[in-house]
Image 1 (cartoon, rainbow, N blue to C red):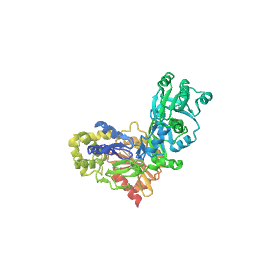
Image 2 (cartoon, rainbow, N blue to C red):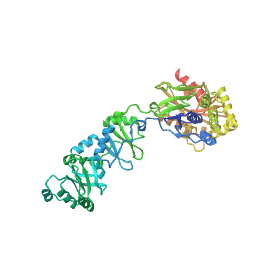
Image 3 (tube, helix red, strand yellow):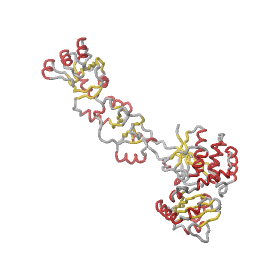
Image 4 (cartoon, rainbow, N blue to C red):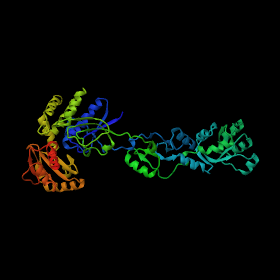
Length: 539
């Protein structure tokens, strides 16, 4: 069953993480193979919530870029090194391919053999030595087992075309020889007495009982075939192990987690068609033929709590967005086909997801209700944020009938856990909740920290300013604002880069401005800070 990845924005907050979890749970209840993921480290507040409700943290998703494993390549298309040249060539014909990976018994990739390699190596093969198995020879010459002593057959092929006296006088046979002959019993006896490695009887010839006893006594392998001497001599070298002609030089190998776009770029340079595919342990998974690639299987994703490509997963343009559940303004994400897009004027994505549960008739458990309620309390700052709607309050009340929390106490403990600065560097604080926005060619980043310890940050104002300037240069944004939101006093302290003073002053109608200025009644980035800055930039 195809998997759907559900995730929030790049800097996970409590609403986005819990929304991914609760929506994925709903999808699974509806028979959809959905998995919640996060695009970054969760913050302390979210960790408090997940620990409180005993929910496992979602796995990290690095990107949704297409990988080789998303391509319909030929899975399990490979052969063992102990297969004969003939078997490999016949396999290529049967599978209609021009190449096949060769592996050992542990499926470790040894190399790639192509039809061109076989043609070049076998056509010009002057080596009359065989390195193969008894069974390979049997299959290649359509033979019948007479006496089998050895599994492995190594030796030089000789066709006894002379009369027996000439042959015996001019050819000294040893245990390293493979003799092809018909019903020429003097030569047969000479070969058996010389203890050759293998005797091949052509034309349907048979051995008398005394010769069978002699062959067994001297440990001589014997095969008979209805083919004639010419026919056997012509095809027997095809019974060699394929490993005998396998290229030893480096191969162009694809790993299943290699990016598809990188492969396309490389393949344009290499101009080859066949690529073995391996896993991280070099175990062969199959064969990718560039000429057979049609439409890749794009990762299916569902976005929650965002719909801006800059805030989403790396490689989103290579994925298939199937649904969006969000409560922010509509961004510039486009899709190739119509999707379910649920966008409401509410303070939390979990408020929307609550209605999705109700519409689909899926029961909300105590654990899920607790996660939803936590997301609502976090994003509405316990209903103090101007983004809070009556709908959020009604949904929270219904959820708490199931979760049975003391809301004010729980919210305070959640905020205390989330606003603790213990063990955090300045860079950590600035990246707790950071988003970048654009107006035309102008970009601006707003980092927000909800804290009960705002003085601790303001006392290090110069250090924060220095880091803000570094981040601004590193990310190449036009403006950078750090909003330290004081929950208890219902306002925010602003620290900003040196080029943003006039922008901040105009956006919030401030008569006086300085680093660390307190702006009353400003606590929502989505509904207050971002719209104010955008309005100023658009003038």
